[in-house]
Length: 124
Image (cartoon, rainbow, N blue to C red; front, side, top):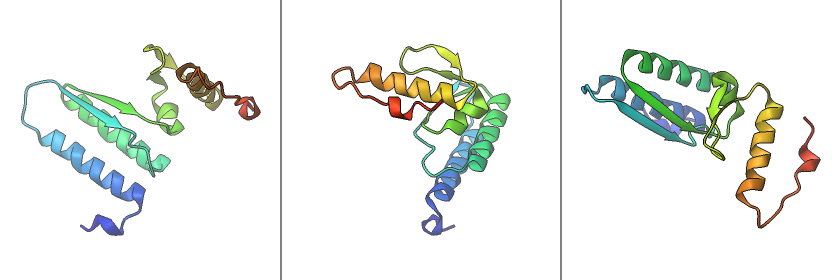
């Protein structure tokens, strides 16, 4: 299959499904930890749903943990409880407004030397 003819999202989901299949076929009795960093570029909500479903199935069939870093709200919308990278605590996000506030507050925390005023975006 020539993934060069795919869109960015199609190519990413193709590679991710191939990767998950490789993990499924991995012969080991050890725990497996998978880190997926910024995998959301170009992924549609439908592809995110399919990916999360595949990961759920895989984690139910063996001892595997997935850590996903993402900027895509749809991951948070589906999963609901996430690890807050700014304080290391698990939190539940119930709305886009909460998600936006977390990101905005995090930007302020991470870059105190350059106070940014995002209040014009605070429509939630």
